[in-house]
Image (cartoon, rainbow, N blue to C red; front, side):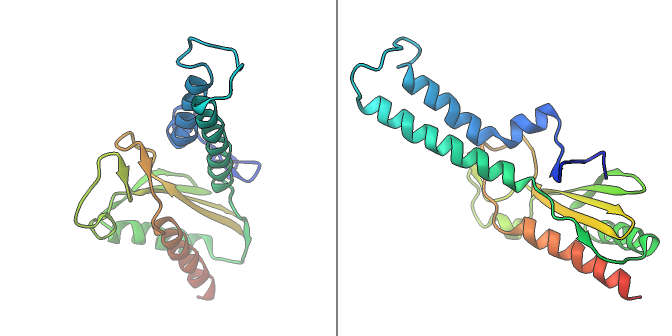
Amino acid sequence: MKEIIEHNKIKLSFSDKLRYYRLPLFFLVLTIVCFTNGFTKYSFDDFNTLERISLTSLLFTLISFYFFFLNLTVKIHDFPFNKEKLINRIENLIASNLDWELLEKSNNHFIIKTKESLETLGATRNLIISPNTGNRIYIGLKDNQFFVKSIFNLSDKNLLVLNNGESKRNEKTIIDLIKLSSEE
């Protein structure tokens, strides 16, 4: 589990962090541009509309960064389970879902990538804001402890990705599978 979590948070590479935090970074750039009037003015003599926009953008930056940071937190569950049966069930679950792909596997963790689903996309698709581009599911196993965390897929396709509840459904599916493997 050490490979993918650090201090009870999902550990992302630098490029994944840039993609994951793209919304707060967008608001940060907007804040800087507004504060400096397009990098041409650095004084704050008169508090005009541009400074108000920059303060609002700064507020959105802080709130969105905090929300995204908290979303990487994993909850460690203490629950007895049969590791071999569980690994077999997870592999069967991946094989039975054609839109799921195993990205990484070791004896103590899985990283699964789900593809966007037609039922979550709806009839139309916006190219800037996407309701879903799939998810990345992190599963960690250690003794009688496990965690499951699903975050939106870190693709470059869309600027803003909205979570429509698929991440929580994926987590619940895996947690139910783990609890089911302990009952046998």
